[in-house]
Image (tube, rainbow, N blue to C red; front, side, top):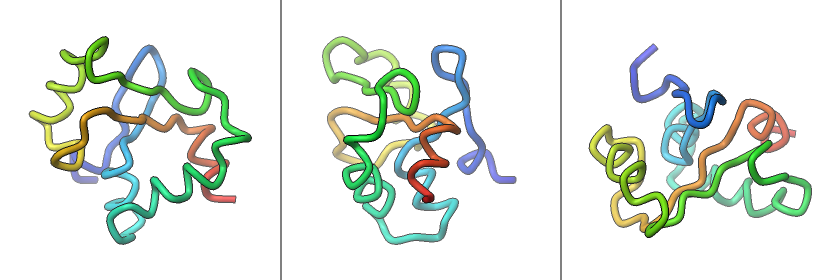
Length: 90
């Protein structure tokens, strides 16, 4: 598997960014985000996803940008866990 399509570890959980999920599923840009927004009422932060704040998590966001894991221009990020991804796919 290409490195961009492999999960990475964040706070002890395997996660993927919206960009990675769109690429993995060969879906148009924004598809994973739209699925996330549809299921958000059912998702639990720190269990199904992690929200990275542009100020609090600036260092982590910088590292993700350097690795090409975020869409350009994204001031923050949402990282989806395996259990979160399962819910998005339902």
